[in-house]
Image (cartoon, rainbow, N blue to C red; front, side, top):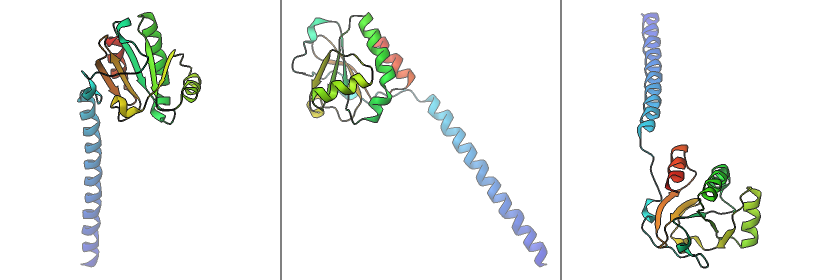
Length: 168
């Protein structure tokens, strides 16, 4: 009788482990598929419509101005450099100015941008809370009235990168 109980116990434990593995796999697959269906979110959308002021920047000179709010201490800013270089090229082609805003002093900010191979002409030192920015990187498109018409926070997915380019 003891051998039979032991065998039933082994079958029950093995079945439970197998069921747990199947449920885990189904859960992972479901979450991956569900994440593919979710629309991209724009975490910076709360800034849209907000008027911003950056001393020394005139918004009226062009249809749009791209504002990159970065920090020399931000890993996501550094990781986004390839996109920023592509964005800089498109902005130049469309005669859209690009402004970099960092909380660090201008010499430190310019060295950081040069290290990323970004050639942004207008670099400003502004405290992030003056722009109501809570995280870097934040990318904003500002209209000629100085109001934010588009805003994105963090390292952007390819879908959101295309969205930014389309807004220019």
